[in-house]
Image (cartoon, rainbow, N blue to C red):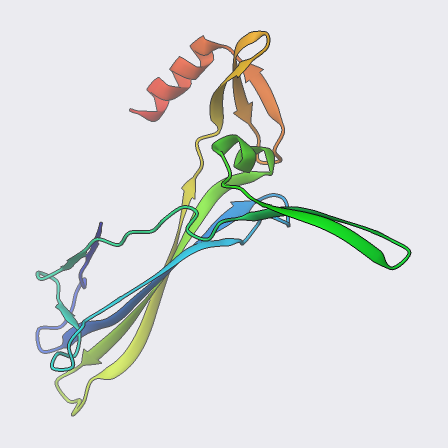
Length: 179
């Protein structure tokens, strides 16, 4: 949920949000995964009679924007070539958390551009101004996995490598992160 308002807006100035555009992408240490866009979203007033969503210091826009994690299915494939002839296969597959962590994914980036219309006391018409913000959401780096030897806890590094840790270490980490 987004709550968007101005801070320190002069009393005789008006601001409207014309458009909100969001992109989510993967942040990874490995180039083949880094920057892959996962979803895009736009929100705007659906009326030709209103300039946009009005906002001020005391009147925020409260908006819910649904951003999916894998709305475009990631495609995994292999192609073989020899003497000018190729053969290949493509398989559609949604990645699991471990797939991302093993490929060096350590965060999601949410980039937002706000298209604003601003009208000051001496402006005959509103003027357009864009504002933007990027936030990074760190991936939870510890996975509980069943192996042939039993339950294993893997704590992944940003490189995709992992250390095996104990259940007590997981509990301490979880307790520390909830404070």
